[in-house]
Amino acid sequence: SAAPLVLGIETSCDETGVGIVRGREVLANTIASSMAEQARYGGVVPEIAARAHLEALRPTLDAALAEAGVGLGDLDAIAVTAGPGLAGALMVGVGAAKGLAAATGLPLHGVNHLVGHVTADLLHARGAEPQPEELPTVALLVSGGHTSLLLVRDLLTDVEPLGETLDDAAGEAFDKTARLLGLPYPGGPSIDAAAADGDPAAIRFPRGLSSGKDRQRHRFDFSFSGLKTAVARHVEAAGDDLRVADVAAGFREAVVDVLVTKALDACAETGVPRLLLGGGVVANRRLRDVAVQRCAAAGVALRIPPFSLCTDNGAMIAGLGARLVAAGVAPSPLGFGVDSTLPV
Ligand code: KG4
Ligand code: ZN
Image 1 (tube, rainbow, N blue to C red):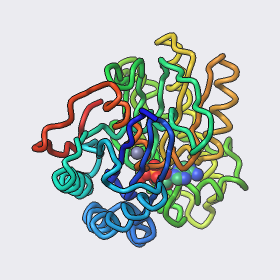
Image 2 (spheres, rainbow, N blue to C red):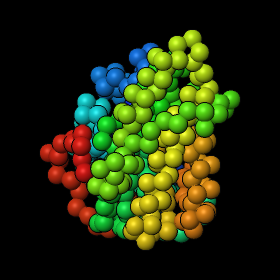
Image 3 (cartoon, protein in one colour):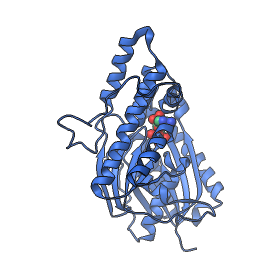
Image 4 (cartoon, rainbow, N blue to C red):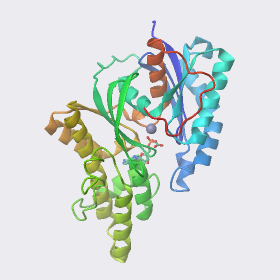
């Protein structure tokens, strides 16, 4: 087949991901996570993430090559996440990718992590039929490291940032709030579990940037720090009477409501009747349910890639690299650096 065989390396946060694709077909998608180690600190510690990537990269690369059944000599190109993300973590992946490129003579593409998340939706499993490509789309990317709303007309040439979080990422808000409630890390799954027995209407927590004078200017931006503070105040005031299940349910409802409301507002304002979800927070059951219900009511087609492609992974980076190769885009100059705030 003429589709390019591309290796992708992802180290922007706490997942070490190495993926191999042929065009849009995923041949390997291997992940090592330092989440268990991060759990001791209740969040991602950048230095620990960087060191864990250093230890995990070589075995993850070997596993991916074995899973795909290819050697480095078979590849057409290498792609690596250049940003956004944690600078020290990104540097490990980019350094490794440059070393591989120099040793093999393969072209190297430094790519954007967020555009990688969007690319995930275009990939398909080995032997499966490819999905039709449905662009333009609005994309809501929600993880422990980022919360972004994008308008994607073309993956390579036209990705417009509509909004992002001004403080914590959505997943980070789950993690910090879980800690306030004495629930284990990662906070998303533990709040999801605690919320199952709670009443989401018992406590109404604030929806950040949804009212007041900043409402219009920040209509597609997010803020979760006020919500976190509201939960902290509630916990303090409740004392021994704290009802963890109700707080978890109310908190989750506030996050989910503001995410879905703003994403659908973006669809309405841009006239694009498609919404793509990505990032680890997509595991949230309530987010999925509310997105399904409200998208159906609004006539918006909802797409959620399989979970292994929603969380940070190397296949999405490889997939974006394969697109660049197929489009004849020149590789990155070997001197390129990481950019922790790389724009789309
Ligand atoms: O995409 P991801 O695996 O990568 C990083 O950000 O590193 O996302 C991890 C984040 C964590 O903050 C975690 O708490 C959140 O996704 N998460 C969830 C759920 N499962 C994971 N958030 C809400 N509900 C969940 N069920
Ligand atoms: Zn991500």
